[in-house]
Figure (cartoon, one colour):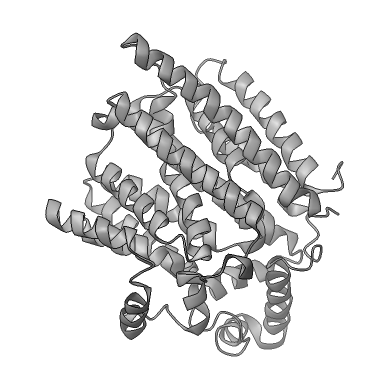
Length: 387
């Protein structure tokens, strides 16, 4: 790469793709799927990261897994290699979806293909959610481009590159929850169920949110109110939840419990600055929702989806003492907020007060996302060495 660290490369490519996208949207007959073309470019820095520097990242584990799986394929053949990966490698015991997902990439000689394709899949899913919202609400390509930029600037994309599973699981969940609530077709419902299973299989952190979706099948106000109370008291009820989940869930083992329920001590997982800026992001999402209601836009969005989003917010607030759950869930909220952002960025003509509020929201949203981008660069991106 031209630049020697991930931050300079990623920020430069974000700017370039935004300019390219801004040019494309002014052409006639440009499909909303131009976002996928931009994704191919945005994902490029992931191909050139040095997985060994810094040494604390999970990328080293996946790099090692790919090398071992590749050796097993050479020794035992394809079926034997897969069997070894699932039963004897020692990686992600009782999480076969993760093992199979990584094993599929072992057929490539270069491990960089794995990191590139993984982040490309993530970006494609973000674009899928955006284009679905655009299609339903007949929004412009400009709205899609701006919201895509705001999401990518606000999100620490290197967490997905090095961690692989968690946020891929969350974007699958966010995308198909939206499709689920807006579809009545049998085939799409089946597809959503499969997507939920895949999300849980990739990372058990998706399990509570899938359970929320299952409970939402019971279209009852009282049940949803009880669910909201449960969500916001999540940390208090943690021991009981742990006992119940462990008794019936195949996906909850000793290792995944930590991922699912987090830790009670902030210092044992992350620094104060990350917690602080992530909390700023959570506050911005809550303020965004309040603006959404103030402008009476709640009628434009599916009430089921909106209520699901509110429950997810309450769950995130309720898990504030379990830092892993708290920090991850904030990014899920960011993905779930995409339909709200797109409606707020769409053309709007009504009362003068709301008109001013909307414009203040739009500018402050872009400025805040840039602030988050530069913070992530300072905390993470600039420390990642490129080949």
